[in-house]
Image (cartoon, rainbow, N blue to C red; front, side, top):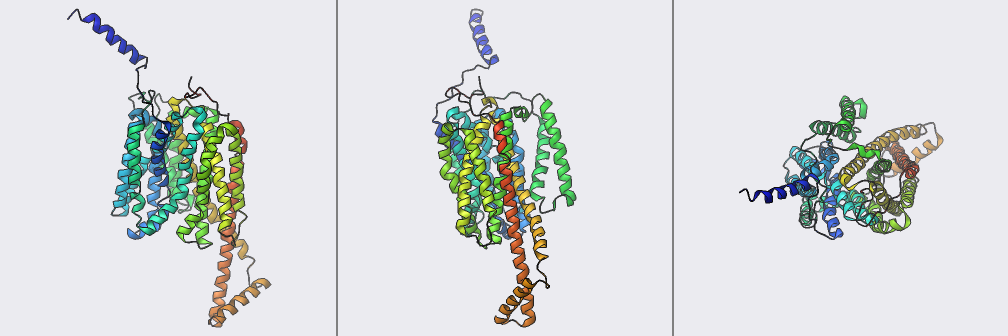
Length: 542
């Protein structure tokens, strides 16, 4: 027994020293980086698609479950609330549970909850399953982005972000088209069932090709329960406020006012608490980096404009130009086509042309195409909408890929998961704000223009008298008596005023979104161009 002791003690000490130095050898298999990228990109596309694919199915969901469309919108709100709560915690969750394990659990949970959503017998059950779906899917975007950024050396990250950008930019655009086709051809339940094969492929590929790097480890066994609680309550209130504020007329509603106060108080306390606590659930000090902070702000603006304009065009096409739902979805597809074709091109160009130059071009082109949409009128045809959207898709490619590459360039690999979670969270919040602001401005400006135009349409105006006489004569020619023809002529005149007022309100909001985009141009000067480190090494890690 004593003879064996000198041999055993050095062995124990050797392993102890390695553990204390965090220098345990970890064998990470060499895997083709494109296989790694496609493994995680399937999950990302599936999750982002589900933020918009349900939109066109809401009337069908409400009708089959004896609910109004307003009640059915809780299927969207519940998903977004759960998603917003989980997103910023992704970096901490990945370190606590392991990135690969968390991703596989997330995809599995998303697939199971999607299947349950398709089987939901009533609206309450569907909302509960959508909460599960949103919570499961919240970690997919930041984890996928972090894995792809780490799989490629700095010189080739543009290619990785081009592939990631295809999911982020095109999925919400193609979502309504896919959702409309599935609903019309089969049933709204297939909007959820379609996730099952995609999730299965992602799960198998993740199991085979994705591995945790050695620096992904649990830093502390302590859980920041106070931080998680304040974050969950604050984000839930903020997301419900943004999603339901327009329906409740914002701060004229006591409920919306209460939600706003709770969100401001708890999110403010969360920020202060996370900056002083020893083991925060979200590392906010990453915003001390000027390039990263500027990039996150610009990505928030991109989400604001992208989602705000996405919600405007289908409404405009269906309510003013009388496009059927599916045709309206097809008419909004050119933006996705432009991104789909040019995203890979931008990924190849970024190392040759320069990320900041492409970013300037993307912002300028995207802003000008929105202003282009603001000069259209009620006589606009399909091609009048096709070209500005197609060019805007190209601009989004030149915007998203360089912006992501520049923003993430100075971030150390150890902080990549935390940084990508905040980056994606702010894009989603920007999108929710864009939808809320666009809908509110559309409603308010429509009322304003109706009042202005209506003031000039009165019985004492000669042009109004002539137009009413022509309409009344046309009604009488179709068989109406003089009294009925006069009432119908007046109603038709008011309908004409309302259509013109609605068109003017769309023009106002498009122009405003374009100007917001162009005002972000000076911020590019605050960002440093990406540095190219040694092959396979992040410039932020030395």
